[in-house]
Length: 219
Image 1 (tube, rainbow, N blue to C red):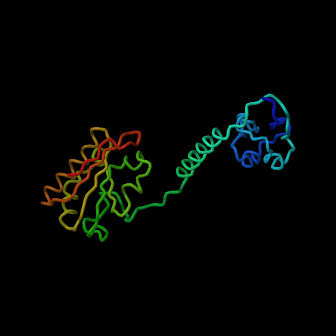
Image 2 (image 1 turned 90 degrees about the horizontal axis):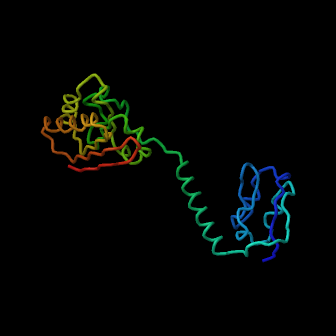
Image 3 (image 1 turned 120 degrees about the vertical axis):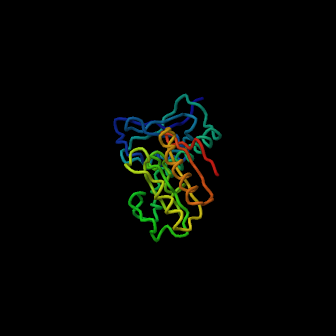
């Protein structure tokens, strides 16, 4: 059908994007730094974008074009809103949930004040780097201890045993990586609980190198 529709002069366009924001139908986008009409059927031909352009790069023309499709516009705007929400969530600044310092197992005193009556997170140190939302999903409201049973030049069994004996720990969460050597952290914690004669709620979470939870077990 022949109808009135916008046209954009790329030679005049400076890529400011004001027309993109002004178009309530999502008909205009930016490609290679220039405004473009994305689809004919998104443009209602009312020209809300014209006064927004500081370069006078947008005008009307009459040509063969698809009819304005209100349902297609609604679907497009719904997708754009979802994408914008996802991008916003990804860019939200995460505040630290760390409640104690130091955090390295070898540096923490067995009778540190923050261990009393605590929920304990014992993390293989790689897990905080692999899992993106580690602070919110694991560290929040817990005392965090980190270490690596492969690379740290010490056996943590005795120290963790003493920590369990000296403090009223209410629960233990262990985060470990998928790699077999990281099973040492899980085994060390289990052995320490046995040595201390403690039967506490124990959660073991295994994380892949890509940051996915692949196993989550409560004992």
